[in-house]
Image 1: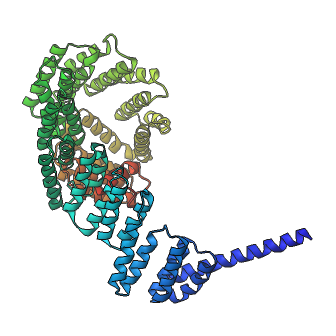
Image 2: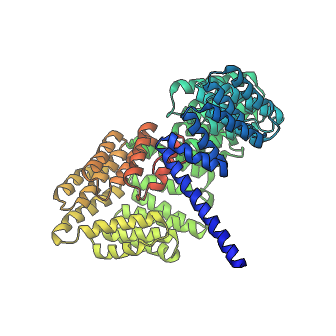
Image 3: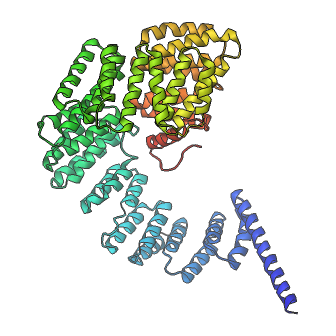
Length: 607
């Protein structure tokens, strides 16, 4: 008997649950189709049985859409009786009265909600959002201001107030709300920066940038003792890539806080990352001018030379007098600091400068041999120097000596990224010399490398070899291309440009033609001819949309627009194309991250 009763109870329960589920599905379907008169029948039934917040919301909207204002008012008032502390319901009531044109009752309902506020962060935030959702900006602002007072300033509602002003289109008030928050506490600096991300930068309207800058200058004058406003101005100027003026502010703040060049060094590092080499060089010079006895002198000396080298080799023109001048600076620095484990980085850079740009092979090799033999250096540093030495020997035509050095590093660092890199370089030597079968065998092993970049490069070169050695008639084109790539490695760009046309003309595969297009672009980019490089990348994208390299061409095009030409809008569009067209690309993760930064969003805007 008991089992029968239980069975009947469960049967009724499941039948009721199924009925409610079906009613809800029908209600939602009618609601989505904007058939509110049909949806209301089911929502009314659901609301009478189980008045959840969602059911209440949809039921209320149906009543409003069908203009059944009397029932709407009854439902809202019923909810208020059930939940008198739910202040959002008063916004619903006021919004209803506004629809009916009753201004007095509208104000009464809205004001009553604000008067009933208590020191409860969640309730204040919910009410402010409710007012914002119905575009009652003044009441939303009043809610947040009252809430700030009730909470004793412990939570300033900075982002919420700023969002209201932004929605209103009142940029000046929005900026002021952020800046006033910093007056409460400098600890809000990062929050303010995050809130301003949508309002500053080259991707943003210039007028808006000027408003932010002018308001900041006002606050700096109004609160001269609060350095947080100067820090924010430096951050903003950096967003605008106005590094010279940012450096002026950084130096002033560094002096004011007696930081001994520490802040200037940090700023210089930011400039290097952004490719603002001139500003970085000036920043390091400011630290050097303090004299060799200061804490940051040696670090600034080495870093400045590194930036000078980076600037010179990325400009693409390589004037002989500038190369020789930089060589002298390196030698002077090594004489001043002495050759030691601490100056290995300078020795590596100087050797690279002499071997690849001045083509003084003997001097470069001798310097790196000295570095390899340096006492008191770690095994990893020694291996890094040995790799550089092998590179220099390969550039000088000492092919098999280079191969032996790569092999030594590979053996010493098996199953490590450095060992995989050495193995890849060794395989490339066999590729350069036409031993394609052996090169491919080594490359195929490296496809499983833990380092994604090495694995990707190995796979790409392996595919080129496989595609262009299927027939012996194809190999001459691949042999010539391998020779051209060796010349490119050795930095003989004029010879490379001449021979690439020949490779393209005799190539029998699209894979090799694609590689040639990308190398043409690379050569143009090295010479600083970015428009020409973009043209070659565009040819690859248009001609071979289903080929091996259009995603790489898109990525490299975006990088030029982003880091060389500093056109963030064009860069963002190219990144977006890559995300949409090639979601499986090797470059997708970095592309997504950079795209989000450029368009100032928190979540993926495209899939």
